[in-house]
Image (cartoon, rainbow, N blue to C red; front, side, top):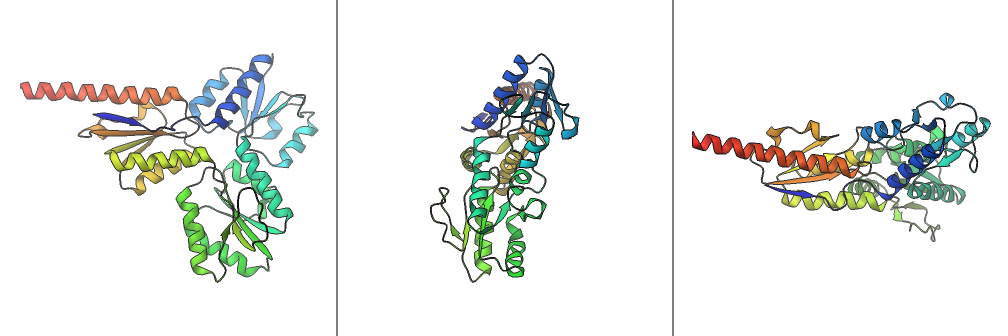
Length: 318
């Protein structure tokens, strides 16, 4: 049996930085350190941080007045900063912002497009904190968010029902690269006007119909690695948190290739039946998955393989 681990599996730099910020703040803080929502979408990482004096809350009202606070990697709307400010929680004092710089880039793109007369549509997950955060820089809850490539009709209807002078599509950083491409292709196949790519630098804002590639490079790298694994492996194991958008996209991508695939959170979920008769095992992991979880899964695969080999030898002797 050969085990092939994806080159870019595991933590991206944005997640690493967010965890480092939270740990450093908690270490220097005598009391509790509060984080609004999940710092990163991985249950094991969250549990580990909870053991270091970090308290995760889903409701901003649960954060006490003047409390030391860390903002998660996925980014927050301006309303969050305003509400924290009312609690005397501000940057430079007791607010530590762990927003991924690539998410901040998307916020800046959204704002600049809006300020240049564009109606902006988001390709993202409706309930994902990043898409929600970005939407608040646009039209808040009234921002159109589409999740799937087949939602192109919603975009076209939205255009036809309104008299937009300019319209642009941007993406959540962790969405499917192929899905985004297909969404734009589907829109263009149905419209008389063609959506053109606007460079990330936003140097050309004369385009009436445009889209900006705001999917981050770590996401692209991990999805590209799945392409390579699918060509050569009998099975692909994807490791990631239950709420991890980029991990789910890796799993969906491997299934699209018709490769037997499984989505797990840790090595305990591996089933020996999955590996029977398999010669090449592909392993990848989302950007919120720590290296030690990947190592544990690989080790578990090796142990299962050794056990299976021993059973086979015993059967042959008998």
